[in-house]
Image (tube, rainbow, N blue to C red; front, side):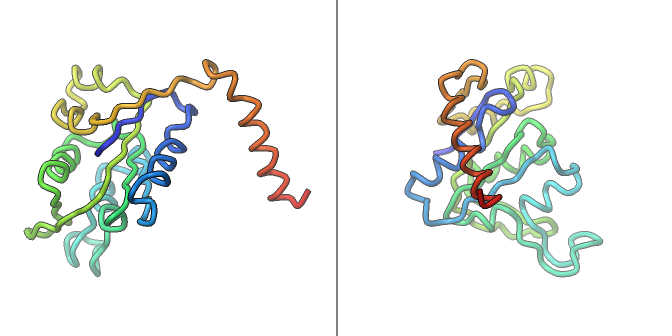
Length: 174
């Protein structure tokens, strides 16, 4: 089952994605994260799908992508709204067929992954503007989870503060 986590920056989407992985049947398999906003359009497909040797100027040897790294486990795509349209089409193909093509390859590679994606962007607006594929949106939101901002979850602040203080104390030997 694929999930789509939505909510403002800082609402804990990546924490929830990891919790879903850690409490599911794939918990003993890899949890691989990729922030789609941190990579250029040229690099995103290389990082996501990998590449065969010679596929581009820096592919001197085969490159394993995040999909292969997440095999049997969970791939978490943060900031999914930043994924270029061409890459969205390839991701949709993966979700529909459970196969993908590394860059430069004409041979499909099977993939067994759970995909969890997250965004702070209103994907409905992005679809209206032609920046996000409607068919991909419906494939992603099989399990939609909307997270409210921390400002709307004031009861979480003492627990969060305590955890942060504990972490800081451990890191600094206090």
